[in-house]
Amino acid sequence: MMNHIVLFRPDIPQNTGNIGRTCAATKTKLHLIKPLGFEITDKHLKRAGMDYWYDLDITYHESIEDFLEEADGKLYFISKFGENYYHEEDYSDSDEDHYLIFGRETKGLPDYIKEKYKDRLMRIPMHEDFRSLNLSNTVAMVLYEALRQQGFKGLI
Image 1 (cartoon, rainbow, N blue to C red):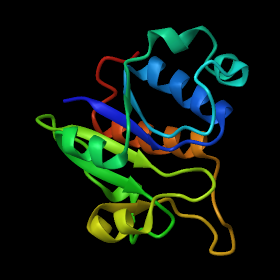
Image 2: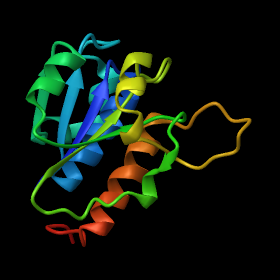
Image 3: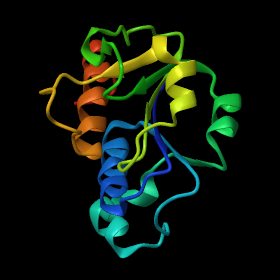
């Protein structure tokens, strides 16, 4: 079983760099779905990811459809429109890979994806008047909940 972080068309290089650093520190595979809102060579991405960027297990996908065809495991989509809470999900299944899928910072996940996977759509509790949380913080919260349920296997 492996955890995967999937970013759908990320816009902000600093967020992706921070998420890459979190993935490297937890031995979590990172998937980036194109088009990206920046170049991988962006200095802000490299600064946020520091020297960890080259330690990442990273895969690039041309589209979300390409990613979904290749994904072999349990899918979790994170959106403020989800009815389920991320901390109430069971990530402890050791036989399946877990894909934690996050939308764009500016627009989230596409509506057709939210509709198709509405039973797999999860949210983070927050005040109803608030639009969103920072993407790298959101990824860290959800990933570390999955890791906690998995007993932080392989981490010290």
